[in-house]
Length: 377
Image 1 (tube, helix red, strand yellow):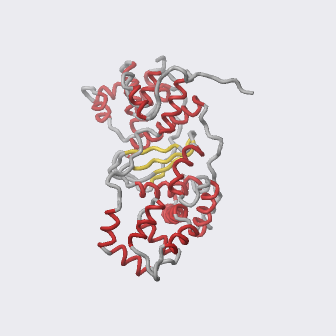
Image 2: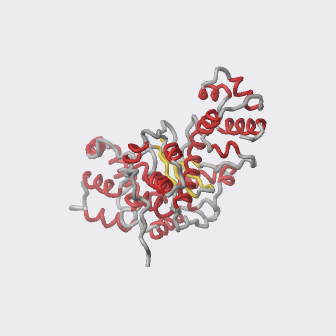
Image 3: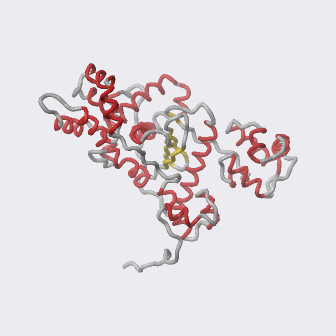
């Protein structure tokens, strides 16, 4: 707490502006009677209590150490959105980045860092094309060992194999986003979207992550035409990754009966590959297994839509609030004595009283014996 008030006030002001919050906004969230209180804090004219510092760090979506640090502020990693939210974008990005920083800290404390380096593909802006997307999709499918049904293994490989930080936020607007920071690669997903839509978004964001060095955000912010082109190419990459041409062709031909294929079989294929029926139909068009007129007619047919809806699960699978790997690493760090019980509860957004229940929800029980050891040969 020996940081000069003026320096602390300046940092609070900077973090507040990053979130596009006014002094009034922050005062209301802090429970202050007047925005003038925030103004006094930022000018260094008012002392902050310990609980106020903790509350400010939480509201500003930063770690307390970042708030109290005397080092120069670091540039915030740029978050690339597939479809940017119009409201509270800064708040969502800061929260996403803080969660990723916490995740990386837990990897270090628990010894849970992955050995595999996330691949970077060198691609030229002059040469990038749909053919590039198809080639890269084939390479990634092979390197990630995704098999014949890539969507089923994709998230596990990203998290467990390459340490990609994956978070889900409930958002009324906006779609998936990705970033690479000191914590490594990360993906943010809109929890409100259907599972098959999320699968497509994951594959789309992988394209941006593997070409991050070739097309850094600083370049894309200046060249919007290139960004729009890459978005289309990322869609092709996603389609090719989730629906491999060889596997899709074999499955399609298996379902042909007397030169026709039934609606229910097309829908069944989409379910097998965990993609939308629309994504499957456009992939079949791309592979010249169906023509454009046929695809257009299917998509306009109300009967097809009704059959499609009738085969959907009544309740979508919802990922937990915190990634299971994140909770596991936090629990390991705690049992190793690297993380206090209070900090564990804070990171899982629960109280000390409710911590055992929260841990049990993720399959962990706080009991003796986790520190048992065996002698190795």
